Image (cartoon, rainbow, N blue to C red; front, side):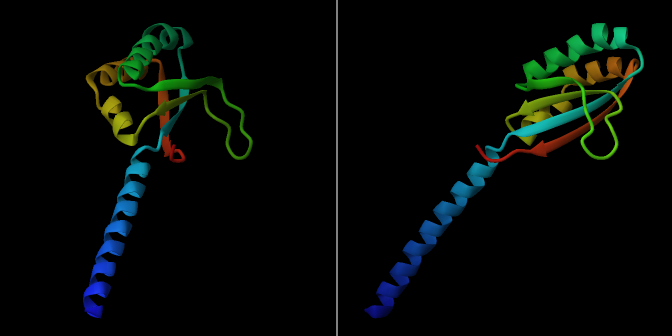
Amino acid sequence: MKALFVAAGALVAGIGIGALESHGIHAQANRPVFMIEDNTVKNPEGFANEFAPLARDSVKAYGGRYLAGGSGVSIDGEPPKGRVVLIEWDSMEQLMKWRQSPEYTQARAVGEKYGSFRIIAVEGAAK
């Protein structure tokens, strides 16, 4: 009988730990992703008039949110090479869906006529 109680206790503990772990995995899925661009612009007029509207529209269509944009300041290390843009996404999956979209592919082809891109993504803290 004692063995039955021990086994039942272990089963309940295992279920509880599993539930907590699945909650932890779910929480990680809710981490925002921040995309940092360092854009070197060769032709500001073409970049602003042709590329920027296409890029903005594609980001908005896929749920990205512009948080900041402008010239960055180096605190340590090499300074940014150009215009810095910070965009928030709900997940890495959402960012990659945008990155592989036809809308962004078209915008990127236009943008490459006027500049070059360096893009970094980092996960934020869980919400």
